[in-house]
Image (cartoon, rainbow, N blue to C red; front, side, top):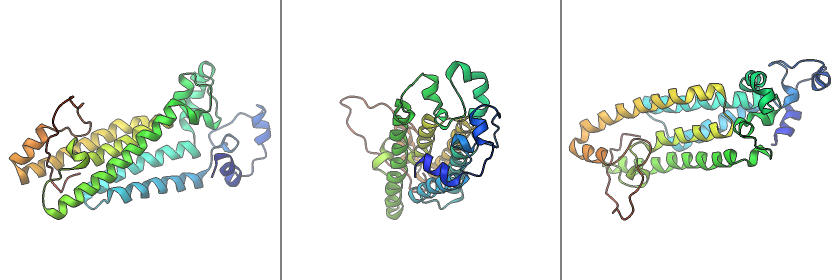
Length: 253
């Protein structure tokens, strides 16, 4: 469904809409229908789709898993609330930055990075928006591929050795963070920009707690694995370096 079609489908009756568009009635946060917002059914639909999609890749089972998914879910709801519901960030920034960067309350202004660098074309074709698709896709790939390797290791009762675990110790957490970065490239908001570093700290603490459990179970084998891998961001590969064998504990993510 296109944004224009959704706006028509879900728009409330608004007798002052024409006068607001003409500038005789100032817009407020509660009168956003004519600007492509106030589409609360879309907020619910898109939030549910991305949360369920992520859960189907992540397969949460433990309390720690649900905490990780819960943090991601809160980020997604905050994002789509501003993308289709209540554009708090654009409303707050249109005053101090409106004249300089041409910010207004139209829906396309939500692609803030394009406005700030002066992109004049379709914001959906800007480098930031196109890059966001790559980063979001990479994040979902990390979550899905990490689960496959982890599940196989759990069934065999061994450390995970293949796929993304060969480079990072927590590819699924890294996948969640990558998806968030992708959304920040596409549609940054004050709330999600504030949430991201907090969630990064939360995932780091979850990862450290997991690593303590794995080290207690596998000792020197885990120490050797941890010495040659990183938690979230892989090291730059060295040209000509032979691939290393990696092992990781099944219970961790």
